[in-house]
Length: 256
Ligand SMILES: [Zn+2]
Image (cartoon, rainbow, N blue to C red; front, side, top):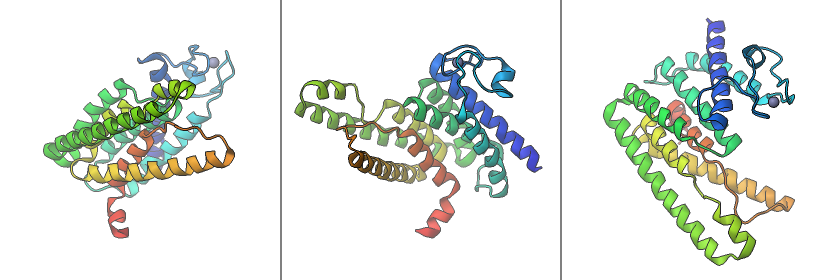
């Protein structure tokens, strides 16, 4: 049994790696490609060995990390199942979460295609977990809250830009405090987590994101690399908030 769980996890990890390699560069499902030089790779090179690009020599450490993590996830899910979430629904959700996190960390990007497919997955899984009403209200509130934060961030940036001059102003005009991808992502997470728990998920994400940004800022100040504005990928925090509420809600309540 445990071998079967490992294998299903490994397969999910492969899927996450493949989608995270191909989608940001090609925006569609193609043959596996090298993320370094864009050359096509054969399936055995890509999946089995040597897992190193013959054209530019790029090896992919991330592939191993993702697959190792994903090999453990089904074992954990099987032994401590979350209430109300069927095992196979969890697997689908974790593949989606994995793709969002890897692409956002590597490219600071939340793809529209991923969000669109995510919305279908999210509504489907949401209905299975907590029914239509909580799913739709979760999506709507997730959209509303993030849209408000997005507009607030946009206004805040506009105010800062007014007070800056020259080069710094030009570099700031390309920035976005919160990407619009975060808004679509949070809508999908709203479907999945469901109303009203999704509000707690957003709260956890904002707290965690703020804390990590602060630590990062202090670190940059200490090492003297401080810039006035730095974009942080918020996708991983939003997903973490959702995972904590979905899978660790009971222990969390016990702590509080
Ligand atoms: Zn290559």
